[in-house]
Amino acid sequence: MKIMVVIPARYGSSRMAGKVLAKETGKYLVQHTYERALGAERVSEVVIAADDERVAAACRAFGAPCVMTRPTHPSGTDRIAEAAANRPCDIVVNLQADEPEIAPAYIDRVAELLVQNPDAQMATLLAPFQTPEEVANPNIVKCVTDKNGRALYFSRSPVPYDRQNGGIGEVSFYRRHLGIYAYRKEFLLVYATLPPSRLEQCEKLEQLRALDNGFTILTDTVERAWDGIDTPEQYAAFVARQDNVE
Image 1 (cartoon, one colour):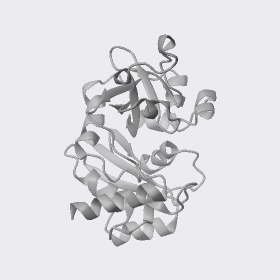
Image 2 (image 1 turned 135 degrees about the vertical axis):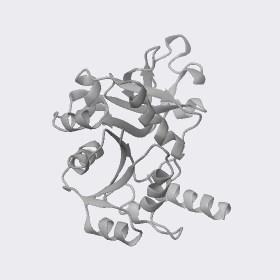
Image 3 (image 1 turned 90 degrees about the horizontal axis):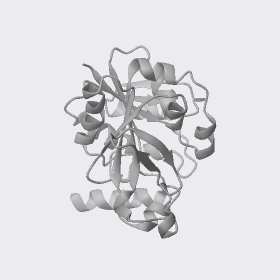
Image 4 (image 1 turned 120 degrees about the vertical axis):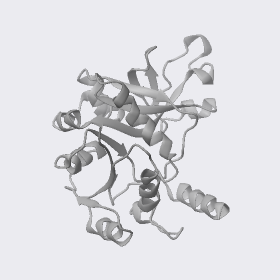
């Protein structure tokens, strides 16, 4: 079974324009993510899906395969669907370009969910929360699953609402969503043709389009979350961590 990672690398960003090309570590941010993906043992191919020639030029500079996609895609999933449409593969992993510290084993783990569960169309990863403040933070997405790990809902609100404790109960009961997905290729191509759903538009969470249309999203809980890079402050902290490693 062929597993391909597609990294959607959009140049524009509301909180940090051009962040995928930030290079204070000596490597582009997207290059760090690409190299992490190459470390996954089950992956056959890693491709970057760009929307801007500046990103494509950077990818050529560090030797990464790059596919130019339309700049008008409403989500990263739509972008990777275009990039994967004409490439031979069975499972497509959507890895965000601003995830330079993801463990390669987690990439294998999300793909393995679909390998082991042939009836599922989509999979993603969750992690424990550390504090009640994280649970309350609308920038950190929460997920509720059934007892078999199938996602029931994703929200920016603290879900489930613990009525007895005024909203947020025991922190260990909550799960945060991590921004990595695996799709069966045929499902991904269908998914990209579906219009954005009402829940998706309300929460600004594209995975709700799948649940709204009755598709199954499998989940697995990993040991810890990793930090994506959304702001200049987060990027500066990442650079400092790289300096400490060296």
